[in-house]
Length: 555
Ligand SMILES: Nc1ncnc2c1ncn2[C@@H]1O[C@H](COP(=O)(O)OP(=O)(O)OP(=O)(O)O)[C@@H](O)[C@H]1O
Image (cartoon, rainbow, N blue to C red; front, side, top):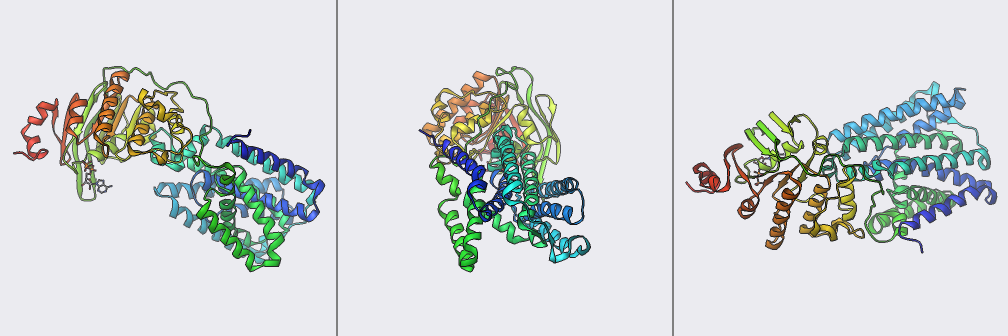
């Protein structure tokens, strides 16, 4: 019996066998169509690394494909060494894509900048190819001699396709692939799992551009002519259609989509002309609407959209039982303004190892802002943040998390496309700390459904299990019981208290519910108008006149 995961593997094997046997049974025309389909498939596979795997949509990927195609054409027409030109094309591709993706990711929301930049680069390269007539023959293009389609050329395309697909598959099946899934699906949670999501996504985008350049170089002999059209938006949008039809985020999908659409184009395109394009557009809309995972998702059947690659755990980063002395967190004179609004005005705060500090204060006091500064998600305007004795004021989120910080958000942040079990595996990937509380084991073993369907209470339990899987020395929580009913709130409070007892970690909890604060807090700190106005045990703090005036509304 073939399992759900086995279907695409079997189909891939059958297709690979068929492709190897193709020159022996098919006409020269059919083999040339197949070669073109494979080149386009490799191009789609390249784009998939960016769009399907890294979640970075490029609408001008033909820029990179075109660089490869021109490397082939120029080497033949100017009698220049192909390897040299190919290295130049690959270097150009890597540098341009690195620049584009760095600018896009620095913008926080990379979608619009990436679309505009990739279109801009395509048009620029198209213009250069059109105007640099002495080298490129302008809009007439450069002819490339017909390859021995059924012989050496077909084998070169096939072997290159298989090698590149295999290398990319090894990459996405590794620890890097798991990080890429997290970085593209939920950059915030990825960073809070210790992943440098910008670097991981940028690497995938650059690899995607390089694969597209290789595909372009293979395409030139099959096409016979390389003109500025090769950089055009027509090809860039076609490859998006192939990928959407075949299925993103898989090894098989891009090839399936590209070969199906190219074969359709070559056999029906001439006869049906405009009707073929119309039919293709209809298929694209139907796929997006009814099968967003494409043909591959139909083969795979129901279940979570994504699976984490199976990878071995590394040894733990830090000891499970933590020292009870020393400061887990020290803040000094932390200041933060949003425009003219001063939110934090010189905050000092200490959380000793092994203790739970609850941070309370009226709405808008700056509590969540302070947590974001501690985690590194926001940069303070002034002051210092020390974690476990080290100044981390300028360090990014993932570095602080790797030092032993775990964070739970007001709205639980998990990877909704992954199963609960995969979420926990991801969080434990670099720590090996699968320290899941007993009451969570049913949930965190769940492997057959996506976490997106979980209730709020279960998502919160899952998020806690993920945080614990990272073996944290300091856990920061923003209103952990927000939106939970009384039973779930009591259960979560008990679990949090047990975590501190069991692991010896420190905890900083922002909370409005005074019952939870009484249950958990060793110390309470009150924040008001961006300053701490009292700290100490709950009874002392609640009797403090400034607190009664500011927080409880009593003068
Ligand atoms: N990104 C931002 N841009 C502008 N203003 C912001 C931003 N984030 C927070 N603020 C403002 O900073 C102030 C403090 O917000 P913050 O969420 O830190 O308060 P809080 O104490 O956590 O409140 P609550 O208890 O309601 O969650 C608020 O006035 C809020 O509107």
